[in-house]
Amino acid sequence: MDFLNIVIQIFAFFGITPENTPKYILFGVIFFIGFQWILNKKIEPLDATIKKMESFVVRLCGALESGGEISKIQLYQSGSPLNLTDKGKNELTNIGFIEGINTNLDYLLSLIDKFKPASAFDVEKISIAVINYAINDSEVKIFKTVEDYIYSHPEYNNPEYFKAAGIYLRDKYFERHPNLLPPN
Image (tube, rainbow, N blue to C red):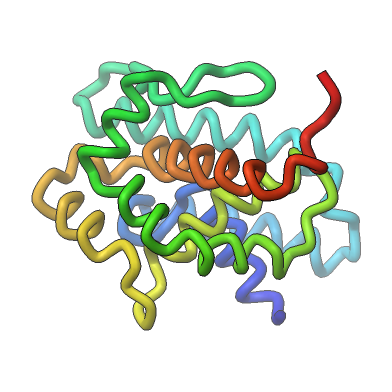
């Protein structure tokens, strides 16, 4: 996998796409990652910073879309692990994510397996990335009904919905691989 694909997957993981993010933000992030790459510094220590940035960018996008109102969509409960709320399950059902995931479950789980997750946290990160990949894949249209719904209802074009779908997929993965769940 080349550097550009890695960067694109990282952006997709955080819901950052050219369609929903101003170009100057993308340029800044690409410049920062490229600068780190050139200096041969490890990118792993940036994980905590990137998580904080993700939260900020999601809230900022929500504020911009709502005309200044910063609100959090309660699709899942924060904490460890993240769990879908009843509202989250209903929203994913209405949008079509649950039907799309259940219909294409074997394919989506095989994409997760390709990354060989070693922990529950790996499964969660990869599941969200797989949802972002599948929704943006122009060759395999497994979420065509979701795309149509979001096109007709642009308020649902929000990374929080993709993250919630990733949480649902993560739970489906754990049903088949309970050995990766940490002990209670």
